[in-house]
Length: 112
Image 1 (cartoon, rainbow, N blue to C red):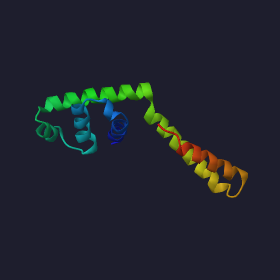
Image 2: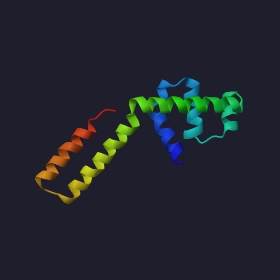
Image 3: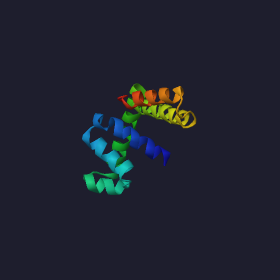
Image 4: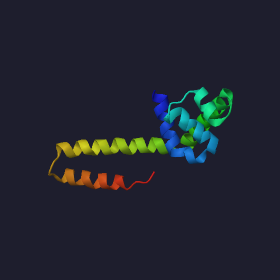
């Protein structure tokens, strides 16, 4: 299940960099949870062809993430935001609270 979520996130970030058939196959497989047979029928190709598209697409998504690290950066930003929210919860009304607000606002503007 975690692998599926990971590839679904990678597909959201890098799907436009794949061929149309690779992207469509991975969307069917990871986002719509279709079987190889169902995908093969929808796309008019063999089950082996579907498997090849999935395998190559996964390799490309892994390669893009290894080089660009967009999903890793997004996870780090989310973790920082969570930490700032916890700081705000215990420092209500203090100078630290204002700094945490400022940092959260700055993180909202980060474009990944």
